[in-house]
Image (cartoon, rainbow, N blue to C red; front, side, top):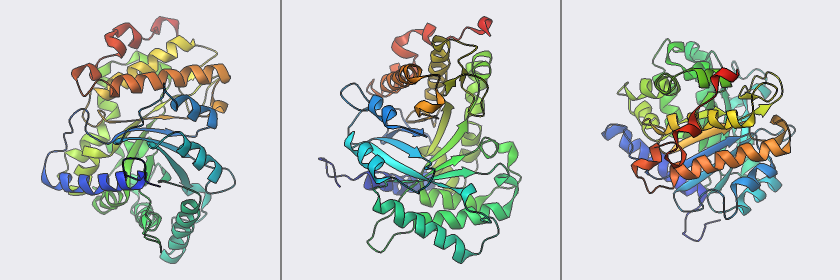
Length: 356
């Protein structure tokens, strides 16, 4: 349904795809602070998470702001109840059920008919349940070195994004595991692959599930170069699809998990560091992201659901902190203050390394 400004979520992001493709072919991918749409993206969510980002103290609910909530459902493609709950939070809140690649056995060698059936079946199911995007979860570690993997994913993206019989179309949010987020793991340009990604996806998310030690022991310069290595590789290629992605779609994802023990999600180990230390970790990640081309207007955090946190109180405190970080960096009217640590207080971004 259109919001009060006449835009639907799909129209806003579909318009962004078309515009970015034009910009990518014509000019440098530099993107000024405050360029619309401004995007936040979260993966693996719960209703209690959405509650924190909604409401009068929540994220902006204005035209040009899009908050994408992606989720991999255990036993279904999508959940109409969750879609309605997200949409009730406001016109800027969007639902992106995940097409989980690993759940489709034999996808790498499947023929086009099978890939088309999977893609169209998913599209039709999630559109009926209120999806605004599809989330592609996720690029395998070998993507940059395996042309067959690239070809299969290119085909799936085409059918996931294909216009249905009613003229509806879902833009994609493409999640990359860490390996294909690093240019060193691409042994070819992958030109056709990236062109298809640009044609079908509104966001391209580079996953950085780093732990507290990695974030806090490395300099802001090192982290910036690390987070944006793929963006720089895409931008320097001169290829239209890649330049378009670098300019208006590339999104850095940071680990938001704060729970006991080690985890593949990394983030903060609540048995070892305090929640205040992890809040400083997140503030440093946000500041570093916001101070680099490609990070001014897009940022992502995961995992977001309460199950990944030490307890409900920790979940709420961390997400309130992320909400405040996003609001600070996005709500300074495109001024240079957006690039500072929260309220210009550098101590908020300093981790206590000696406590490790």
